[in-house]
Length: 201
Image (cartoon, rainbow, N blue to C red; front, side, top):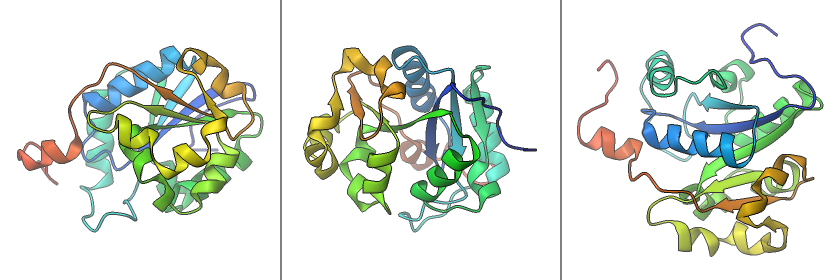
């Protein structure tokens, strides 16, 4: 499939989605920890056309993709515009398409703890929990809120302990793991607020 990342059956692929507006060392840090602690073969950064939960739309895709590639220079990481190619707007839609397009590939959804806090607002969030293992990474100020989130409480019995994170790609969903990694206190919104990133900059 031209323009689509390569993966063959049996590979473990982490998926980190977002607007990456802009990509920063926090994204790179989570990705490095995911490769190491979950034992992933690859991580795909899914640079989204836009976030349905945000009124403000991001900088042009080409600029965000270029920045992401500059931030994450690792041959195991693929920066992709898959969602634009697939025409999907929501994570559940994207995951449905990817699991159909890549049979036998073990996908793991990756996200920061701040996303777990409002995960139950995502479209078809329970379908995601029941169909794709999830790795959740500690984020400054979000640990307690994340572990008390609706998704965390309702699926508490499916949580793997941190030291067992390498089992995540091999577990049938629902399965999730909270990884208490060293935290990098940086965010895309803070970078934009400081005026260090804007469309055309």
